[in-house]
Image 1 (cartoon, rainbow, N blue to C red):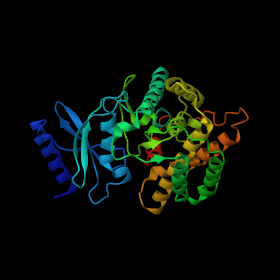
Image 2 (cartoon, rainbow, N blue to C red):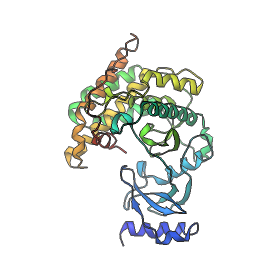
Image 3 (tube, one colour):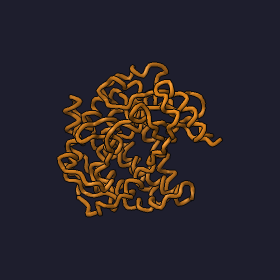
Image 4 (tube, one colour):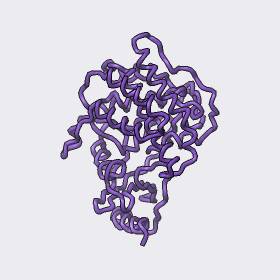
Length: 352
């Protein structure tokens, strides 16, 4: 019996108590992410999403499905829209089922899917508001065991290792950006729940309504500004030459920061540092993905689209830190990239 057949039996047996008709349903692969196995199955006049640990893989990191189920359960009933957890099976390989959320997830700058400017702006503003709400959720909702707090040094150490494991030609300048970040590391603020991969591409929308925040593979407890700075990276097409395209409805990074400050009720200290950190992180991820492709670890020709973007992210991050005290806003030039290149986001989010 294959691993998928075994999972099929386990899922239908567990969910048959809710819906006997599920016995005849089949798992349907949901493409996109690289974090565990993801399926859809018809369930109770709608559908459920199944996330499972791949057979033979350890339930760690992005494959830790029980950890994902934990945060979704903790956020149920809060102002943060998340799918409802239907069932959890801790038997190895573990899996859980969550409710199907209607809507679409579009990364405006990268996906090449045209949306009205008004809709893009509305979704961006809603996303920032949801992020502020997430950061207000008490970490105590998680219960035991306690989740360790990731410091800014932890963040820098993590992505420095990823950068060092990437394509050799980007390591020197990437580490230069890391040095600048370490030299200017801001004072810590009170830690909060953080999503870890917060962007419009991980928010489902039905029109202007946000229906679900998904992809919780790397959530944790840490500095909320890390989420804010990372989200801002995806608002600026100059970070993604030959991958992204200008989207006039997307508020500029500085405006997104102001919207977050209004939603959170407090000024955001050192926003330029966290925008630079977001660029460093994205460059490290892309360089690592490209290295794996070139070495045959994960063959994906679309990764060859990434070199100009990796270089731009590093350069823009360095410029942000260099210009922080001068009033200059680097990286604001809009690109003339082809907005119909739908391969771009597939390459850009290959880390998922």
